[in-house]
Amino acid sequence: MRVPPRILLPKGKHGYIYTDASSTRVIWLVIFVSLFILSQIKTLILPAYFFSDASTIDGMIAARATFGAADSYASTAAFFQIFGFRNSSAVLPILAFAVILPAYMWGLTTSIANKIRMGELAIVLFCFALSIVYMTVLSKDIIVLILVMLFAVRPARWPWLWLVLWLCLASLYGYYFRTYWFIVIAIFLTLRVFFSISRKPILVWPVVFITLFALAFVMQVKLGVSMDSFRTSINDVRVQAGDVNARTMIMPFIGGGSFMAGYLNVCITLFTLIVPVPLLLLGSPYYIMIFMLILLLHVNFFRGFSREVRQGSHSHLLECACLVISYLAVQSMFEPDYGSYVRHLSPFYCLMLGVWLNRPDTI
Image 1 (cartoon, one colour):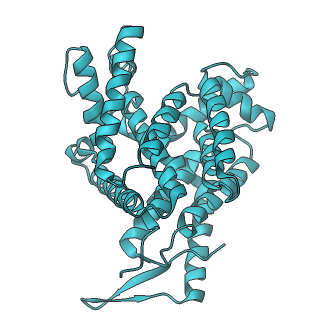
Image 2 (image 1 turned 45 degrees about the vertical axis):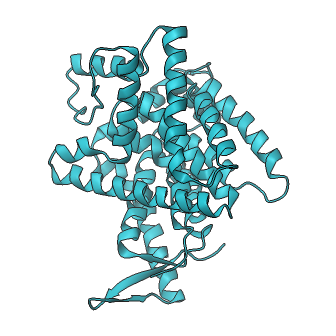
Image 3 (image 1 turned 30 degrees about the horizontal axis):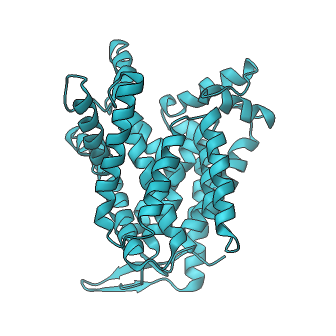
């Protein structure tokens, strides 16, 4: 595997100097060791609400949970139960780190970029640190990361067969854990077919919005609910319960609960997941920093996506981008708050980095 990109340091007002090969290895080693330490001490330095899901899953393991259709918590508990893991398991963070590190190495080395700016490095470290916090515990997200990495490491020989097998595995995950993965698969296949014949990246938005409209119509006709009803029902309960950790809840932008209101709310939410203006409006330095990092991550990712569509030279990275966009579209329907969004997106950060960094070194 290649060494991660060299780090460009500013030199004067108009120049850069980049680290040599040996210095690069040392810097990345220090980064990886520091993040491993974070995986061991995270519960000591971060608020308990970061790990509330892990506590819930641990309780279900104690109750001997079993796999159940569309039951993400029970199925996650049953998965970890197979390996004998509990919240107190010392080996769990180590093994989870051993899954996360190769994922980021794939994102950093699968591209053609050999150099990375300090600002870009900050985004990488932000993503990496979030993944460590969210996925080195009893977490649904580490299972998603395993699924995502099986998609990313597609062999060069018979790629279509690997894709078919992966779709079967993703469908199995959807059945037992998150049924919305069936929608992710459907949107992914739609985008992949469309961009096999189109070289216009801007058309991703009409395709996504038309697909979401079709889903909104089906939900209204078959289930009798608006498209954002699932998020609204969850957040109504949180508001009534006085949830003090719900400052970043995604509330309806258009009231009324009608078919069109629900659809438009989802479309607006999709935009705010990419450009999280509500976080900026909270005004605190913490949320302003999160706003900037999320925005820059998405901006760089969509630049990479546009480049892959126009060039059409790396079909697998284009597929990775289509999978990320499909997941973004689905999360605009179900995600209750921006904090949950950042956590649930963490298994896809490695794909986003791979797409973003597959650029020529023009620095």
